[in-house]
Image (cartoon, rainbow, N blue to C red):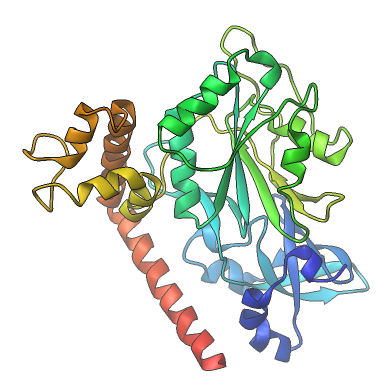
Length: 352
């Protein structure tokens, strides 16, 4: 298998030049286990472990290899094993804050070209939750496509799609049913060879069923959803990349009961562009859109040009981000990341 079929491109090629001259190989992490990784390289698969230097030099567990990462390895061909020395910088990342009071990042997937945000057309459909996923995708520099699954359970599909449009969400929306295979062709047409995709969403929305349909076989275990509350059990227990017949890479992820933000104000403004545009017309440049006079955002709500529920969601997410950014641990992490990116940029400029 060529590196390009694995998703290798000029971005990674430029980063790998110094390692290539030192005799290392490039490989992609397709599965993460407790003590090792499954990697794919030009000559096949291997079980790999990190060097002690890598394990003890990282500033955070998030800097260790994750599913989707490109890593610098020594391949021990006789043993089909690999030693990971370095993780190449990621071009995208889908993360959330871990559940609980602790301020730590949990990475869902890296180097993703697109995430499919899955909601089912039953009691799971929730615009406010959808906005959270879209915000995290924007923060991670990832394209997002919305999938409304279980179309066979809904008699008012167009009304649900219209609710999304009324909320100024402009992302592509696919309506599918794994039971009747409705919309599956539209989903398959979005998948390009060599690119990586992930299904994200709550437990029970049918992510594993979608993976099975795309693979054409039962590879992921699925369970029924309770009719009383539309909740399901976590049928996917770990993240792994699977290659489809189309040569695209697909990641199923465990269902998320809670989706805490790991994002900043810039991503919030990009996700709620209509509010950001209206803000420019406010009388006060530091308008909070709550109690100030001559607020263009409040005026738009009064005139029916902005959904109040959308506005309330914006304020709630803004408060959550402000609280996150007030945390000293989060600020230290952002500062370290900035320094790391600055260092990598200087190294790339040297290579040029």
